Amino acid sequence: MLLSVARLGSLGRAAEAHGISQPAAGSRIKYLEGLLGLAVIERSPLGSRLTAEGAMIADWAREVISAASALDEGVTALRSGRLGRVPVAASLTVAEYLMPLWLCGLRARRPDATVSLQVVNSSQVCGLVLAGEVGLGFIESPNVETGLKSQVVGRDRLVLVVAPGHPWARRQRPVGARRLAETPLVQRERGSGTRETVESVLGGDSAMAPPIVELSSTTAIKSAVEAGVGPAVLSTLAVSDELRRGVLCAVDIAEVNMCRQLRAVWAAGRRLGAESQDVLAVAIGPSPTIKPQTRGLGQVDGQRAPVRR
Image (cartoon, rainbow, N blue to C red; front, side, top):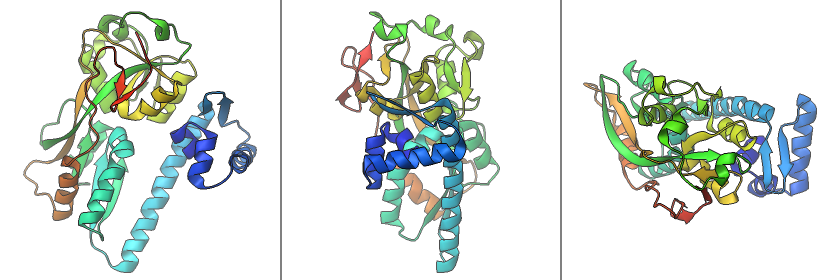
């Protein structure tokens, strides 16, 4: 239930997703808070969001659930004698917002294939592929490491977001690239594709102010921005719902292009297995692509979203 609230931004939506009443969902959250001795969500007229403690717990819970799912899939594969296990690594944005769609497409091609997915940052994805621990990886970073081949599988746009109460939410003009670089941001850890893209666009790590805080997940970053910790630059895929609901505000950035390519990577000189080739083929096919924002429209995935200039 906690992860559903984090993903959907509302206790009511989380209850609907689980097929239960909102009071029942609230009781589950209260029971969890009683077990932990901590408040994990905050309620407001705009919806429910995780507390800082709740965001950390959600991160840990996500890892536990992922490990449990991997265990369940592995046991199921062993029982059925399936050999179609496909080891894949993906960066966080790709794993959370694109990989579920790709897995549906893969099941149509290979009903018996089981993807064993490792979710790490882009730098770690490259390391796993080079070490031969996975045959195929997906990254968001602008640079591909030596020894890897790559294929563009989609395009994404990064957007500067702030809380509605932040001074930038009322700006009449775009934030300049230099001003943004000099501002401490809520950031992912080093090695994250999003962080590497932001640093590349704004002139490199040496040109940027140190992060106000480093967090290991997009969910935690969004919670920190909503709480007023500071601005962040995130994928439009990750914040489109928050922008539509008005819990985050997008701020125009002057002078820079925040679009980036999402890539599949595999080891040069190492042949991809048939299952990995199918995963790649599905990823290259039609998938959500974020178009550059048309000035003044504030479009997100073709829909109008709140934008402050």
